[in-house]
Image 1 (cartoon, rainbow, N blue to C red):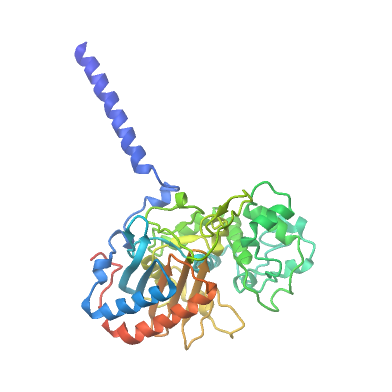
Image 2: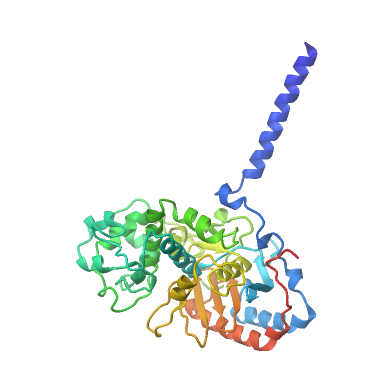
Length: 427
């Protein structure tokens, strides 16, 4: 009898221990199914792998750049021929905690997210679920459920390609809808920030700024709509579809949708900073509180396919390697789709996902909002430089031009000194 009691006690204790282990293992994750993955480059990449005497001059050049722009930290990766040659963090990931930047740290990548979304659209095209020529609205459109709110019939002319090229007719003359949440709440008597579907109904009731396809105006709202299209056509959430059909096939396992506040940070995500003289701003949700702009000034998570991803620079490079058509690492889209994404027309026409693909200067994708600045530059010789900061500057989107200049200087001085290796493979 005594033995039986002891066995029962032991079994109960074991169950408690097992439950605690499972709880600890799964805690602190918003989406365990996606974040529990391992085997990506972030598992082994570290500063020590790129610390060499031959590149000490490059380190000094970057340190001066950070000092000039008062950057707390940045991450830099360089890829050539689908091989990761260099990956290093500079400065602080979190100065207050004394945490130095590593190349494995995650950072908000802002509008570089649009390149991910565009790749998702191309995947759906190859799956036969849509085409770039498909109309978006109207009874035969991809999103017919919004027909009831549309008064301007020019909306029915908008195609998927128009959204990708920022030619759908949306303007920001009345403010960017993705960064005007407080105004939209007040004007529409909303008690809470609108969902993306609610925001779409509000904006689509307005008149278009120009006839679709006849001009262009950079539109975050248009890329948010692309996220809704991906959800409708795939019958999955935007994040799940992109993870399963774009990022994981590309070998990227540590991309995530950003949160708005420090407590929402993903494991390995940096702390963000604004210029030292920037004042507090009203919280995006009309709470009446004042916040640091990068933490609650805007609803970053709601940007979705327009700008909500966080990632490390090595994984951004890995993603680019999967849509570059170079054929060294397997691409996730066909050469035909790659060619469509990078086809260049003129300076007045955006490429698909990329900002610009002018053949003589290469492919460019930038991203900026409060607390971060990102630049991906894929040069004609197949060398790709990726930099993301955890600090915004007073230059805003214009800061990317200075980073592009830094890339040119670094390539001229140290490109031929980068070690011949592939950090995508565990060292």
